[in-house]
Amino acid sequence: MKAVQISKPGGNFEIVERPTPEPGRGQVRIKVEACGICHSDALVKEGYWPGVQYPRVPGHEIAGRIDSVGADVAQWKPGQRVGVGWHGGHCFVCDPCRRGDFINCKFEKITAITFDGGYAEYVVVPAEAVALMPDDLPADEAAPLLCAGITVYNALRNSGARGGDLVAVQGIGGLGHLGIQYARQLGFRTVAIGRGGDKQALAKKLGAHEYLDTSAGDPAEALQKMGGAHVILATAPDSKAMSGLVNGLSAHGTLMVVGAGIESLTVTPIQLISGSKTIRGWASGTARDSQDTLEFSAFSGVRPMIERYPLEKAAEAYEQMISGRARFRVVLTMGS
Ligand SMILES: [Zn+2]
Ligand SMILES: [Zn+2]
Image 1 (cartoon, rainbow, N blue to C red):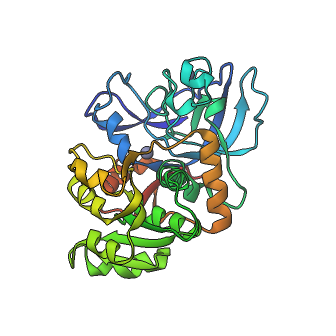
Image 2 (cartoon, helix red, strand yellow):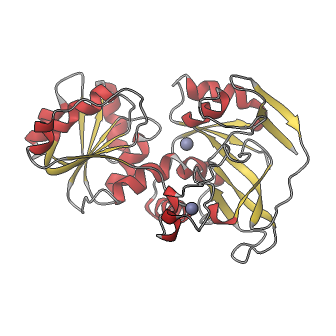
């Protein structure tokens, strides 16, 4: 099979021929139709994630079709359309697993970090990492929903916000352009927060009821004028901007952090005490959460905006993503 690998931290993308992998016990093989390129692929490309064994095939936004099933796999069969995201499996026996908290498994497998990912014609994954993909969702549009999509959808639906609540989405990028759509479709009064007046039309098209331009005024003040946000989904990895939004929360409001920045958030205890506010993070979800995301997207019409590249152009596609030029997600297609 054809695959694109990284053979050392900081190495280039190499197009290679490899033996097509065989699924072992408890595993399935997927013929990949599309694989999204995510900012987190830099963890493999640049070696930021400790313990990755090279060569490694990146890609944790995998959409395709099961073509072979290993021993002791009862729930999947060849021909099924499926997807795989960041959560690549769990042990079933550690304490978090015994409580059903698979995403916090002490021995969690991560797709394209623990085993090879989807920049390839075939991929072998643990059966518990697989999500069923609705027939009416094209593979190239489903792929980004398996990481970017599930992250914002699962964060929003677990945020405590109810229909009609004011929910703000900070950032209109790879995560945010999906977050706005989900917030609208989940029935929230949806406020998009971006920089510059030129993003207003897009925000409205994605479903935002209101748009706040951070270059035109303090978004926290504007949110307070609307009554305060029950939830603010912070998607742009700008810790300073996120910190500034805490004052836009209503009483009992939550700043839901999914944009993975490395700078510290700065907030005073008083800001949190006054109004009993919460800052919390959210980590994507399991394969069943992925399946929920795909199903909800299929019937509600939530779709990522994507740029497509053939597998052979992975290096160019990655550059388009990492440079921030992509509007908004980049997807490799396997030409089948
Ligand atoms: Zn990702
Ligand atoms: Zn476990």
